Image 1 (cartoon, rainbow, N blue to C red):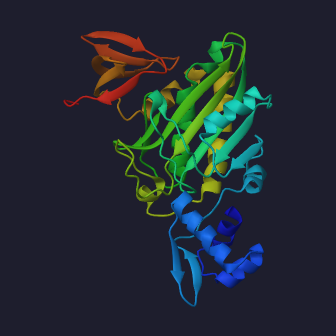
Image 2: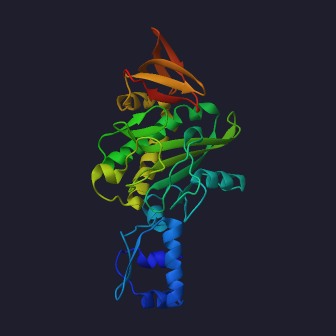
Image 3: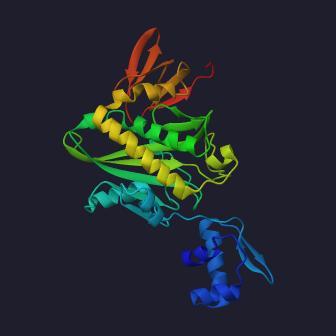
Length: 317
């Protein structure tokens, strides 16, 4: 079926006879595969008598050879479909895969965000990216790492034509109040000794419609008005991550603290910090040198950190 998709991805008309000849199947079998493509991948295919079949819009599929050539720092595997790239990465670790390595997919069937949220993952529209790193030397190597990843994602989006992309503590990249990318870090192993961390990144790239999303969102295409080459985006993101992770490993999060704070969109805003069923109201003062959130709560500065915390603007902000 994906062989057929590769024949159609140029967005031009192809006759059923030519498609059948290329695939070595009958025209009726071509028709059945086209129906599968539409049903399984939610693709729109035009059917015109006398002209053949045409995708409603051209597709650019992820190309591991191009990515490896232009961003060779990590071995890359591209899947047509997985439950989630983070889950696939964790399975690879359990099977003995040697880090670092990168997992990409054209779509996710069960994409995950923070706090158990679903990440909507249509075929060949967005970026589903999981980088696995081996961490030695204990928890200090992980201080502020999710915020460092956010900086790399933000700079990648700006280079892709979204100059107003900014950060929201701890793991989101926004344009105004709309989410354009999210980050999910997962840890396996002994954090006091040797462990692996999966840096999961989801970016809304060319998505224009997503009825399932339960929060304000946007995409690179919606913001820039142009389709984005996802291969070029992977390459830029990998190179940005390499640079930021290198600085973090050798100089610590403190060396990036000021840059992160300068790009935090909610600096000085009135917020509610939510942890389960409880919440704390305060004003954002910034972050500390370990990536914790500094809040002014009833006139007293307090610092909060942890993977299950969520930040919301207050109505009076």
